[in-house]
Length: 170
Image (cartoon, rainbow, N blue to C red; front, side):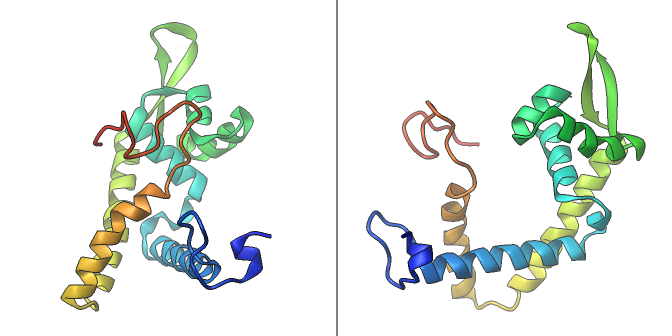
């Protein structure tokens, strides 16, 4: 039985969080994410669509298969995800100069403006909420950010863990 299933309250061996802390952290992250989504103009975009826009911005231009692989979804799922984004003019398709049969996906100016606006609105919500914290609470929360970032991604097989040997500052 896992720590979460067992309902324990102390930190588990190996440095894991207590089950109570796991539940509380999960709820806080989910609720805060939902509140940020509700507070931004990106309400009409799904999580998958926003994620695809962000990946294209970060790694683009990308072929459809590359985007699907980065998002860890099947190509047909990615086609359904980007269809409305392309129709709304947020993603532009251009011929791949290396393979005439393929197209590259990149953010259009409208797509870049949309993702920038959504990020700004969500950051404003967090900034406003952090104004309720004391200076000490703000320092503690800032100190926790690097720890939360370590929870973001599972290391790829054969890749060093974040912060481990071979890690680079990003």
